[in-house]
Image (cartoon, rainbow, N blue to C red; front, side, top):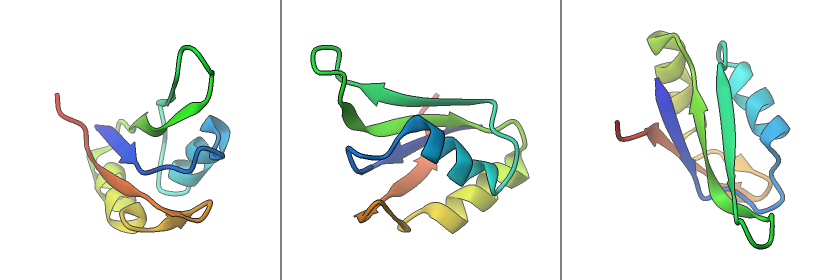
Length: 79
């Protein structure tokens, strides 16, 4: 399942995000979206997890949780 992670702190790294989601299951890809001009985070990312049960567990556990002083939102990404 592809998950959309929004409202990330600009300081959150792709590695931190992958580690956070890996606590809930296998992560196949983690893509922090960066601004092409500045190289800074745009504040959102996509995380793919192959197991639906693990994906739903990650959504339930991480949606509205605080990461780097920002309350993140996690949901299924639109196909």
